[in-house]
Image (cartoon, rainbow, N blue to C red; front, side, top):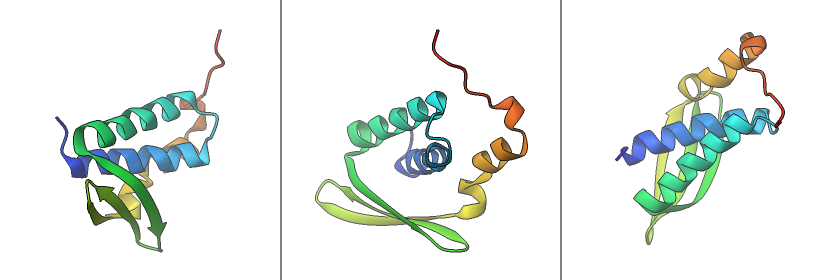
Length: 96
């Protein structure tokens, strides 16, 4: 089982990709995988995200508790930055 912090980090990283690439099926499936993990394994719900110049801040429900976390933008945006720098390596292919 993946730790809660790792699952939140992975979910947020791929969510940023999904937000930038709403038609990217692989990113959507990966985001959905981490959302399922967060809900089924960690009882997380109602995630809210804000950001500033340096950090992403998340607030979420875990059971009856509201919890918070923060992640450096540099780490969260590394995947979308890589995709944007080399888009030819990250094509989305239509269903056949």
